[in-house]
Image (cartoon, rainbow, N blue to C red):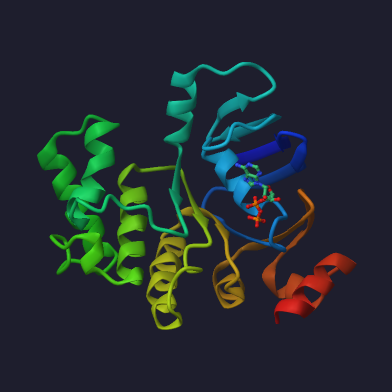
Length: 244
Ligand code: ADP
């Protein structure tokens, strides 16, 4: 359902992605691990077209996009809607309540009626366990609560795929669990997810597959129980030894 073929991304003379090939089936959870600077965030940002790939073809749910050719802005906008992104730093609107943050995208981008958007936002905030915090502003919420608003906001756009970029890295340790719980629930409901994270427990418990990236390429991919106990590649082994 998602396929990435020959994905390259260059920043000036720095080639960050050097030919990524990846397929993710519908309903699967893929966890991406790898050293800092290996291109994990850039790959997610390319999927969400926050960065324009230098070349490569990305297909999501049958909609295919060849970045080797010039691409119209309107095409990018509609393609972006296929994926929902959750950022490390939440990126909520500070002057809007939790509810308004979740309503904003559907109303502005999808032109949903305010009442429809509100009902959906309420139900999503309920789902992430924030039914009693809907009228709070981000500054009045903990990091874990803000991130759960971030997840609800991405879900409100009804994406085909959810992309998580180190969603718990900015959180105090005691708040990590509540965010991972929401993510595990989503995974169990059959949401397709690509998750960049250092949380190896999450990878072990929730991932269908783990991808190890290094130097802008996918070095190894396997089921979590395989890659963690019996990595095939030396680079994967070294990385896992360092972090575990
Ligand atoms: P990771 O997520 O694996 O830590 P990133 O995708 O964030 O890796 O970064 C990969 C490389 O790309 C790094 O060397 C980083 O400095 C560089 N990079 C990322 N974004 C930009 C940008 N907008 N401009 C220039 N270089 C960038």
